[in-house]
Length: 450
Image (tube, rainbow, N blue to C red; front, top):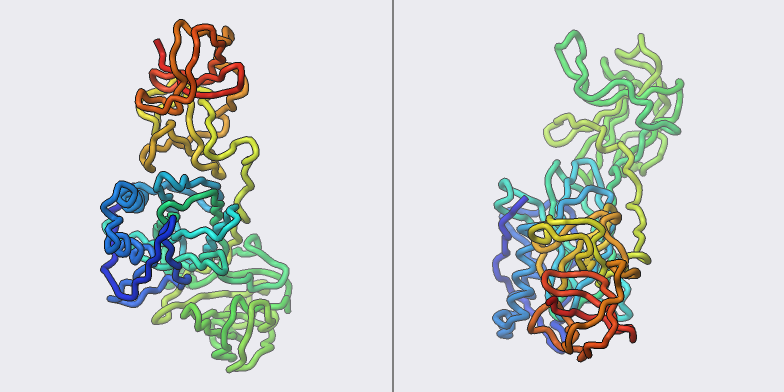
């Protein structure tokens, strides 16, 4: 999916100091709601303005840094939650990472970023909501460096993009973890989603109305619990709901309706927390002919009924751990089969690649010397192998004439050693017209073919 990068307008209050890197702080995280028509700035936007004022935006590194921040917004990696990835940023090669995922109303999404640097890293992590069919990206939250998290609750089902980018000339290894969970606690003690037997939107009264909630069944007087923080707004009796409790969630602007209670334990005006008993389950009101159950409803603005399912359904848990010991970042490995996607036209087995990220479902790799998100290929762990064994059975190979061993697979690469025609070499991989080899002394480098 492609999107246009939306840059926020210039603001005031710029502070920029430059040593080896340009240093600037990050703003704290906020909820998704953004006041209109105000469009918040990020430290990232201030940082770009600072580069321009310091005449660094037009340097080669400055241009690459700004370009990388836009590229990942246009071509983010699409991911599914929960998600974990460890990635490496080379301080000498400005880069960024972008991730696009679906967010659902009723869910709480927690984004955690950790790092293994000994000194405090300097980076930007901003979350955007995709709007206008991808024509605009609206900032909704930024990473809180003190809490090391970014938490938000989507106000509607939508697509979101997270951009992660170190400051200029900074890098290192980062671990990103994104987890999704319901915003509400389950409202019946000892029960779960399997105990819901009547769903939102089901027909009622011969089709004359729709069910505006879910029915959770259990034994009479099973404790009915508050699903969130809130204030009890009403304790009373209604024709359809029987004995009811209504709780107002001021934080989210929602009302929670608990109906068919046998008993009510709270009073109007009382503040409650998740798990506090509100009453005992029953079958009062129009449920007199059914087994005891709780009718749980959620109402938003203008008492619009919302489906409680996403607000209650448990998350899938934390993202899986990564086999990082076997797949060290920034190391050379080689393909175990022919691949093409993201690496250009078909690359044969044995093609040397550089691992830039190790994720829940696989690896992202690039060819040596290549930069940019569009140049990364997504491969499974089974598609990659270590450079421990020779690529061909007839290794070691011998040089036909004296030549040089290079640091990169390019004719303009730096020569790291001169090889004699008697040098014994082990072939480890290939890249285009270059071999990746190892000498008997353990020195590795690139050798032109032919």
